Length: 71
Ligand SMILES: [Cu+2]
Image 1: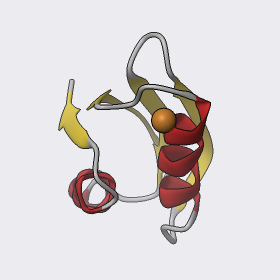
Image 2: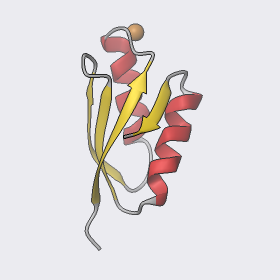
Image 3: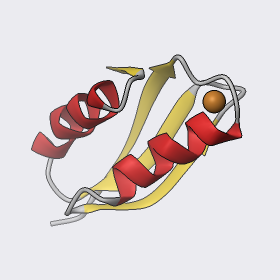
């Protein structure tokens, strides 16, 4: 099965430390790859092996102290 290209909106990032934290949080999830985070656009991009990982990614980002949403 091909992985899906996902884009999440991420609120609450104010500097490169924040975007780095979001990047690291996503990279630590099994099945997530090709992570990039755009601080200015307030978006995170990644490939997910299964669609359930989208909810997992949102949950993990929120637990890291930021606010993620799909879209
Ligand atoms: Cu910051």
